Length: 138
Image (cartoon, rainbow, N blue to C red; front, top):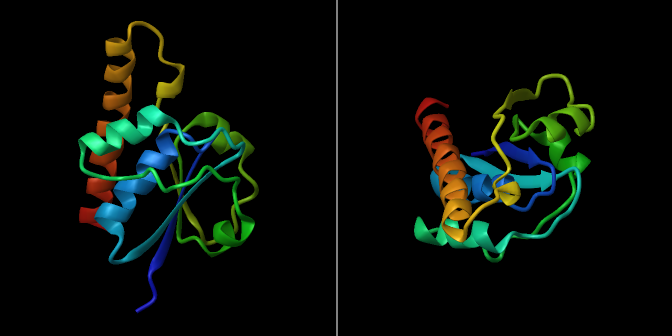
C-alpha cells in the first residue's frame, strides 16, 4: 500500500511544524508519510521537545530543514502553520491539497517562563486537536 504524504510547513521548522510532524507520525503514521520543513532553518527548539515529551512523543531526533521541492512535489497534503510559510512557500503543484492553520509562534512568546510554557502548550494542544481531526476524517 502506498502511503499518502503530508508536509507541515512553517517559517523556521523549529516549533509548530516540528510538533505537527511528531503528532503526525504518532497519529497518521500507518497511512501517511509525515514530513516538516521551513522556509528558513532555525534549529529544533528545546521547548518544543519538552512540550512533546509531556505528551509522550520524542521529537529530539527530528531536524530542522528547508522545504524540499521533491517532497513538496509528491505531497498529497501541504499544511502551512503560519502566514509567512503560506506567503513564501514555493509554488505548490496542481493537484496537491493545501490547508492553512494560522497558529501563533510560541517561540515569540514573552513573559515569565510559566507564561511562555503556557503558550507552547496552547499551540501544541491546538496542533494535536487538528491532527486528531485529520486522522479521524481522512
